[in-house]
Length: 474
Ligand SMILES: *Cc1c(COP(=O)(O)O)cnc(C)c1O
Image (cartoon, rainbow, N blue to C red; front, side):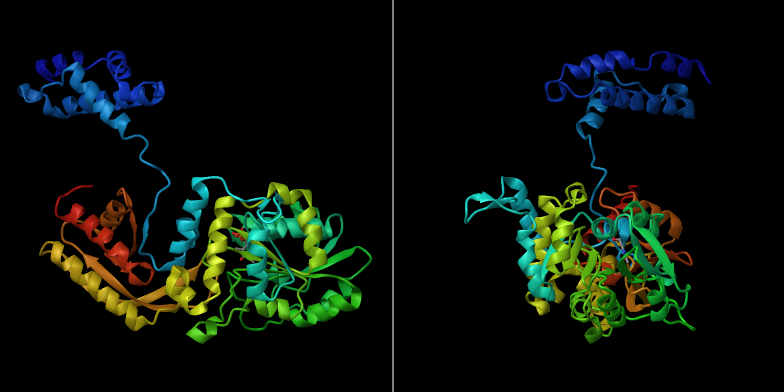
């Protein structure tokens, strides 16, 4: 370290002095001191780093005046917060990516959220009678009409729905469930653990791969409160398997006066097999087969907001609605607004398929994905430097979010290879942008799965790549 560097280090701006200057500025008055201090410290540390790295050698570096240093810190504070929770562009090809917020909302759902959030609402107010109403009534009629259910109730998410139903119908008693259906749903959450918390005792029957109706029947005793079926939505057992179908469980339940509860998980309202996907039992199928209570998520195949939807026979739904846990698990008004708009979409299934991203991504013919991929590739070629290798490739997308586990959906990938950055480095820079682009990496190529990209997001992808590749921004 030379003398000049030592001198510079001695005269780095003083943090306390910077804070005083910033706190006098009107637009930052009252800003939490911790944040101001942190910004000042980062400015000073940066300067110190520059000096130590040798930039102070031979009088190359001039320190900012205290006012200039305060300016720099104030700029950091002024930009605070850069929101942590933000929109990202999902180019992974995982359609229901639980880490990426599962289902994007359709336009109408977003508009309803904004409108209801803007002011007061009739959340629990009956506008016709001028008296207290029920929040569930805003979606009850729609849900019943769309599924053939007698009654409907919505809560915070499907795990909450399962917890509530079991508590209301089987607390202190037994719930019979097949060993083949004791699933983990991700994030280390296991359905059996959620169930235990309800106060119901799980009476496990059968084996992992085979459970027969007679296994259920043998387990029924004076303590039995319900028969539970859990849709194995995120995996498949193949080979030597057997399960009791819903219809036969319903018949068994009837014989012993026991309600049958079906946790459907994904909850599909549209017959997916019509669009080349494997058949998922629809909610209507399950109710028609006689399930007394059915639960599913709002943000899986349904394509709406996070919610738990409970449908079924009125006598059970009434008990569930009045259960005190329902108050703790209740759905909020913004979710309800989005859910209502999503349900309205389903009144016209053709429109729902076109307008809801999850359904569109699941059912779009690969030829159409290819057309969009060509457009994206052309956009990228126009802005990226010579060295960038941009190609189309075939690949597979997946439903994700614990839905359609074995289904590989053909897709088109835009593959990118650049000379200046490794694929891993490019992936990281795309991910760390203000509007992050989340991609796949394979064999030192960055892969953009066009199936999960909306055309409106193409410009975001292009701009991110241009910034990184052409302007060298990180
Ligand atoms: C996903 C899933 C759940 C949990 O639903 P959340 O909406 O994530 O709370 C419960 N049961 C099954 C069968 C599932 O697939």
